[in-house]
Length: 269
Image (cartoon, rainbow, N blue to C red; front, side, top):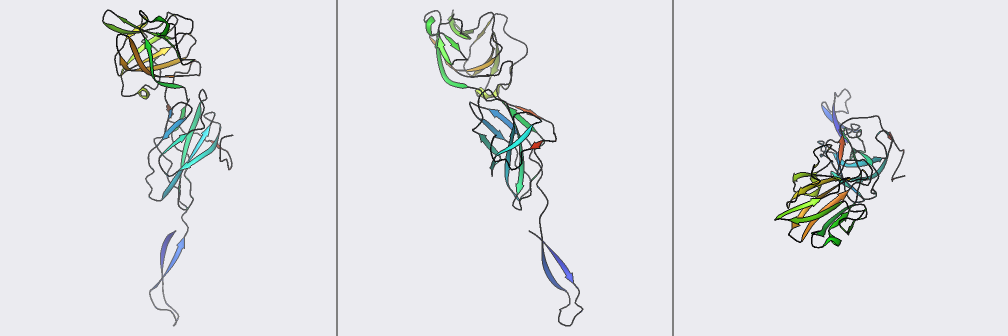
């Protein structure tokens, strides 16, 4: 509670001139809305992060989610820090998030100025496929079924090749592939490109580089090379289940709407 001191002029004999009386005044000022919210899609979960609120009396944050940008936002959790893992998120569904801050007097801010959305998608790590010229039965990979198989069957999205001293990842004529450059992790590439696909339907592989694939059934995937040799390529990957959705990690909508909040909602409906 904030305290104000009022000087009371003594006019009665029993009162001392110039004494002070402490009066408690309720704190009704809410914190400012959180800034810098973003959402990172993972495998069956979404990781949220935002900037710390500048007010010293902020006690924590409430996390809100909706299935549409302008739909009803439901409360799914609270946290004392500036991050949150939505472990109830499921692959292939797009979630829209907002965050509010509250102080020790239970005053709550408006929702965050930035609303983030993410679509969780499956991912895998340390997948190893072989050189199709020597081991064709284990040279191909299908992102949809997370499976290694024959390099030239109907399900193969990519297949590895070592030829004349160089390493390649190949796709078929109905699929596209692009080298996105050196990255520190699989998560750095957030969105599939709209152009610049390889005209030769292959890319030269290098350890630490990430590549994006546009499959023949209009899905996007990415993989990052972990190690490579003349006999095999090892990579991490993720695959977007939603058809035509180019987002492979996260996106932030820099806008503000009048959002509908679910009254008293404590979990996902």
